[in-house]
Image (cartoon, rainbow, N blue to C red):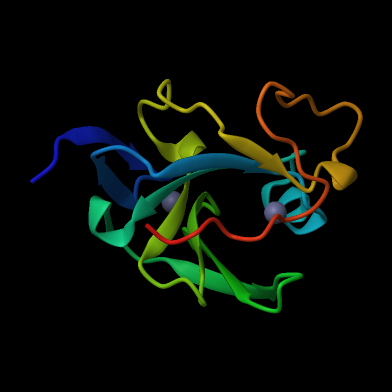
Length: 142
Ligand SMILES: [Zn+2]
Ligand SMILES: [Zn+2]
């Protein structure tokens, strides 16, 4: 059993989760879908294996098609609308947890930024890590 990293919850508290261990990767996405989904300039995702992510409570999901043709399924609390996580249905077993709902998210440090071609000028993300205009090919499986 790996160590508890943090607990988290949605705005209303109906959805709660725990994260254990460390994320495999962390990233920020400026794509227009993420802008619309969040109402902000980018989303912050920490990628965990699904067994590291224990979520409780009722969630709704909404599917969109990514440029890759894969389905991006975004999960949120139907009561308060907080976004909790997403998964690419072609990559089962990996979840992208939206770190804003984590009680402690000081550990977040992006390894990459994607869809920088759609980054609004007013939305500042780091250029100290690889910045991709679009979505780069997925990394080799470990
Ligand atoms: Zn809620
Ligand atoms: Zn995106």
